[in-house]
Length: 475
Image 1 (tube, helix red, strand yellow):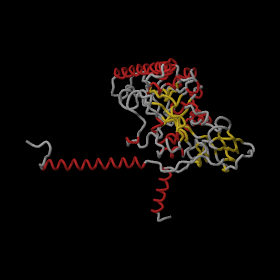
Image 2: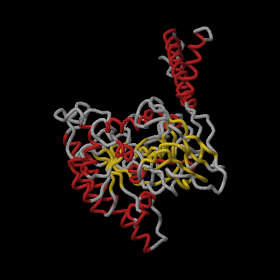
Image 3: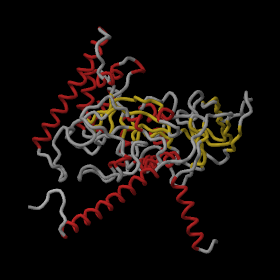
Image 4: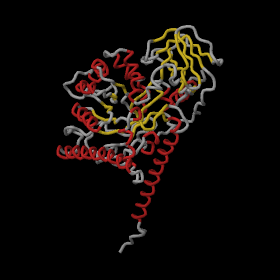
């Protein structure tokens, strides 16, 4: 009877050798992946607090909230804008550092309202993906606390003027109807807002809790080739999801009333995390409803009205069809799919995605634009807006959609998104129109801090320029 513990036959020895070689290959691959993950870290120094006043003069200043100022100046100190204008500069309380902006353009930092910046790094390396949690409903999860301040994607993104970002836990933008299998979940957590500079996530966080994220269920079954669930299963999933949502929101309200009556009651993390949804005034946080179909959008808005919570639509591909409803209830839309994508249905015009911002603007719906591409390409946000300009959107509306409108929807419009006295000195200097691909961002300030403009892309450019210089014999 052969031993179950040790096989000394020639075939057994050969098998063990094959297993050993396979194990060494797996170990080597794992080591390479981990080394790649560890190497994907920004090693640059973070900027210190602003130490001296700064004046940028002679530039074209795009205030966003007001007119474009020609041959103008911007004065900021201790992280805030003190004044700006296109007339004579006043006398300054402290001698400022002067920056010649002749021929340059000054913009407020661009704001991407939906992203996974700092939550993902390398798509092929699971250890660098921190945007999802297990479970169908995890309202206690905050995306901001998982942000990696040393992500190499952050300097690359801010090198093109994107200086603030809404960071969202994983959402089902692809239209999946099941929240009971795989990542994402019905309520994947709470979104936050970060500035793209800081030593820790606490340094970067502008708002740690910007609102609750809900993946609204599909209103009808999906019949696409990739869907492996029957119509009955999909309908059952959607019904269960709606019942779960109703129970969670009703439970959160009951929890608040019970705790108010008896503070000694034990805390419930999930219900406690939802209390800001029912707060009064500026403290109230919205529900970011991920919905694309018109039926989804109408149902999501109706749900929010029923429960007395603020609603923001994320996705919004059919938002124009619901324009009256969105306008009546002042529900803004984050166009999270970007503009560089295909129409949803075969009978749609080829330019349907390109013209959506212009159509929402004409319909009087508040909107902001996200790039909608992979996180590594978040730097292309201004070009997503430029594509909308090429298809009928006014340039000033496009700029507002990636600055002030985005900041307001995320709840930080009182501090960011435009150039005004009293607001944060989060801005950049460019050598041309930021919506033009050929424009270069030359200087960046975040809360008045002069940010290092180096990044991985520039380092790779220097590396390979040197390679080809050497191949040409040092010329």
